Length: 286
Image (tube, helix red, strand yellow):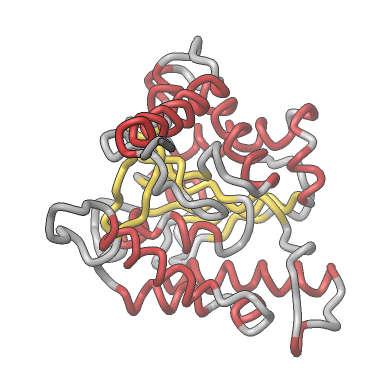
């Protein structure tokens, strides 16, 4: 698998040959930054953790050099931060028992320059090598530009595959914008209640972030519990922790669907539901 960046890397925690490691992957995560997958794709990580038949594969698109930093990391250069974050991602792969980890090592600006086709080409190669059944990536209503560039590029890469090579399920997961606003019938509630110590450990690996000014460990746990408790107002909780996703599978099943219209249809549905409640309950001035 020849990737575009000369310093892109493929890491197999248990030492299996790369081709065999890729072939065993059943659940694949494609994230923009180191730690994105540990936050948004834990549903897949926990499913595969001790399974003999299921394996999680991870793809990180950027090099991490532009990460925010504070405290003892405040003086780190972009190059030092990038090297540190790559090591942290490899530690997470070991701790999470990943089947394979691919770090594509693009700068964020390169990822956002979607017209080059380089990232898309790399993702096509990874997808053809892994042939996952389930894929997790960012959701196209996220507010982080690099996340958006990754998910739109991932969709384009998936559409380059033959129909039989495509995953059976594609989830666009929340990170830099929750998906609580989506209609309950449309959003996918991913149960992430199991293996909380593993989740805490995976996010804790990223000391450069947690101790460097971003408490993703607390924020992630809080969102999971809030999603579960506030999911349904007239029913008891069926799960202790939930992570919401947008089902992007229709975009992979039907290439003629416009991605923008698909996403905005969910936004329009939300707006309509709010408008209907306003009309029903708003008290008009006399």
